Image (cartoon, rainbow, N blue to C red; front, side, top):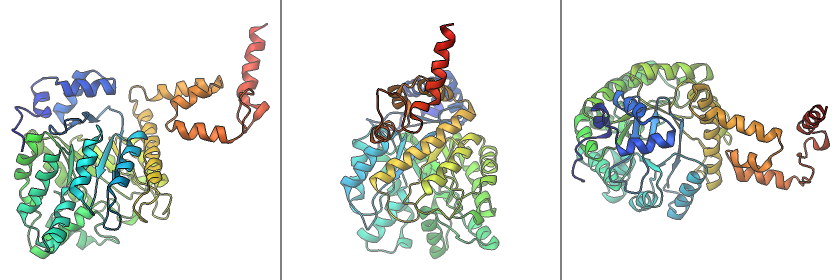
Length: 439
């Protein structure tokens, strides 16, 4: 473990010190570093960067900042290719992902994580419990429920030592929350992998969740790295019918309390959220999180607004993500077309990132994030002037926009597209302007 730094970014911020990381992140966000410092000090923003991620670029997430997008990648037992996951990481970054979570559960997990960290400057997240469970089964020949408390914490140390910037830990999965879920009843119970591992471990060992019971130990481990705790939502709803129930809200209350304990210890946190949520409950979920967790950055999966669109869940994710971002969510985790069906392909990763970036940007316009609406105004001006290169430069997916135009067989000398041709409204109005200017 690296020798503990004098202060964490949160502690520096509380003392009124604007660090180099804050300056770097503020420049990227186009805001005053002092404003970012104030938000970090109050816990409404974070600087996501592990001291050991030497090639990593600090990522600011939170209040008043551009809504960020995360891409999940990682192997499974059925597909263990390192090269394929590295290609997904490159594609995700090229498509504009702000962070990558490595959720590998198959093959050489340590080597995959190290390669992803070494080959990208992007913020990296992980769920150490996945590997602790896999190592227990495949390397030690034990049942997953036979993991010891020390083995769970050893997995966390391993990921932090490697340079992971934020770790998802399901500290709010407690025996009391499980009881509430069982008493109320759910269609899909627990759909979070980390949450289900934890529930099974607690049940079989007749014990409390170690990450909740020994939360202070977790804080002591994380602090020297100045990594971010992403307090995971083990009880996120896996279908619309389970949304905003007692289990989900009870866990959220606990996460708010744990966030305050982390802040007191000088550790930065963000809160994870749903999940599958009907449109009319998304804003309420954001408001509840912000109130119960005292404005801590909110990191949501989707949300997905319907359960019946397998193969198109990147679209259901973008619909819910737009409303969530507009309501105040700070970080969107993408969902790909393969969600609920298979491990995503490289193309799925690209399309998923773009879909969530559309949602994030649409939300930023509503939130008044600096520079958001200005991009749309610039695009409008380029469209009026039939400036195709300008439009491509501003597009979220320039290559696709350029390819569609090229494949249409358009006559570039004509200027318009093949939809309207000579009857292009822009051309008509531009000619009108020339006529009026000529008197």
